[in-house]
Image (cartoon, rainbow, N blue to C red):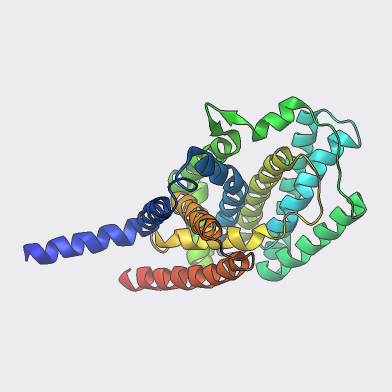
Length: 323
């Protein structure tokens, strides 16, 4: 009996912290293989800095997935957000705080439009966000004329991509957003409403939780976080480029969905998302340093998205069966 209890405890711990355990194990594995290149503070800091944008987008996606809706516009959205935050300063001479506030307001507006298309018009989130995302993409091309926006940016703005006590400021900002979102999703009624809507919209409606009211709110929160990611990306790249952004969409979806198999099994959650994004980053960075070809990353990301969705669905079904 004791052996069975211990085995059950080990399985239970792994099922809850599997992504975190795999993250640590993978990092140790590549560090042993490449101690001089992989196991360095520079490499670790680079991964944190490079993954901050994707993690932020995964958090934005998490909010809508919790409510039962996918958001496929985040890649296009982060693209126009970083273009505007750079272009308003370089082309139009706006002060950097005003440019940031405007981009954040645009993000909330984009989220509102997506939310209204889903909740009021009745479009599926897949169609609404993909269609509006491509509309945004076209506006970005119109604004840039298909060319890069390059110019001198204020040091106070580019400092957003700097370091604080040796740690990337972008990662610290992402961590702060994650902490706030965790509190909202786990301890505030608003977050519980989102989860209720995602679990069973009809039951939530009968309980007085209106999808017409809360679906736009969840998309607006996601839009705000996405624009914040665009501000960070603009400070990091220091250039506005139309082709940047859409490639982040798959990684963000995979990170949020893969995170649903850890910590809060069967439910998208903040810390599972953090661990999932970092796990994917460690694997890709390790393979690249081992000499993998450039085509390995998109194949791996596409495969991971399929696996992440499958695992999330299985975990959700298992949870529903137990309930």
